[in-house]
Amino acid sequence: MKILIIIFFIPRLAWCLDLKISGTLDAVYSQGLNQSSTASEKLNMRGTEISVFSPIDHTFNGLISFAAHDESGAQNFELHEGVISSSKLIKNTNIRLGKFFLGVGRLNRFHQHDWYFTTAPKIHRELFDTEGALDTGIESTTLLPFESIWNVTMGVTSGHTWGHSHVAGVKPKTPTHYSRIARYFEYDTELGAELGANYIGRTSYNNEQKKMYGLDFILKAKKGKTITHLVQSEFWFREEKNLVSEKTVGSYIYYQKSVTDDSPFFIGLRWDTYKLLDRKNILGEKENNIQHTFTLPVTYQHSEFSFFRLSFSHDFTRIEGDTKNRDQRLEAQIIYIIGEHPAHVF
Image (cartoon, rainbow, N blue to C red):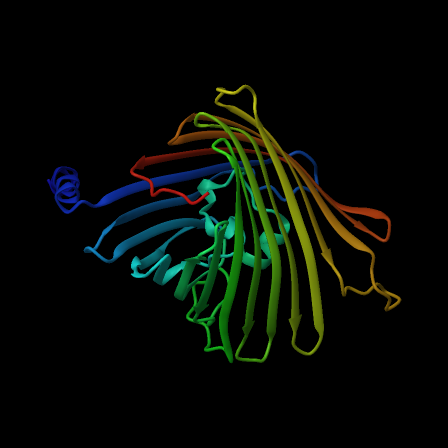
């Protein structure tokens, strides 16, 4: 009886209150193709998300999002995002307050189910976690009063933890602070690009300093509603200082093409690199190391609300000229969205 009441009552309550409700499932099966692969070889309900968003009044908007993620075989259900925002307090500026994904880079500003590929590049996983860095704080994005389109994002968040965390953390000496300045280029109604420059800083309670600098880029060419060509890339440099200094650099570049101008099939290719700049070899000299990953995803987009993706990836590390840690795998992904999904930025 309670279930029937919920099924009958909640949609009607949402309609009366002008609530927009969406639910998303992101399921991934990973199959190793060589003996050294670390693929899970099972179907994971990687992410299940329920979001409610709506105007609060004539000034503010609200978003509440809950998500369950597969972590070591267990589903952890938690508040994903809880945001109050407004674009009416300051001219040409959107302000949001609460818990959210930091507005930096490209992937970190989108949920996993909105990515064009299944698994995040190595540099993103190391710097931002498998999905992204989220925290509680305040952020503003301002459209500058120029003829060309420039956006400046600035934010300050608690910094008690970094990345995805299930603990309260400890108050840092300097909270997480970040900025992004982006330039949008519109060539015509069917071709556009955006280039962003990013900075993130934080000093933890034990005096560990973190500084990250990055560039992000995306280009889209469309025919009607179909993205016929897409190029997306990020480059990041991280420096961490405590007792010693550690520097990390990495990037990825992804190209995707539709099979035809109105085809639901898309073929992509991604190349990732990742390098530890301060690692030493057994002689105490700087080690020559670099990790490469090549990923080939094929996506079938049945509609705006359902995707099926099959990816092959080949990952390996080169250390002093020798190839180590080969990992070849196939990943099958299913994504579907029910209800109303919020509009995305470019």
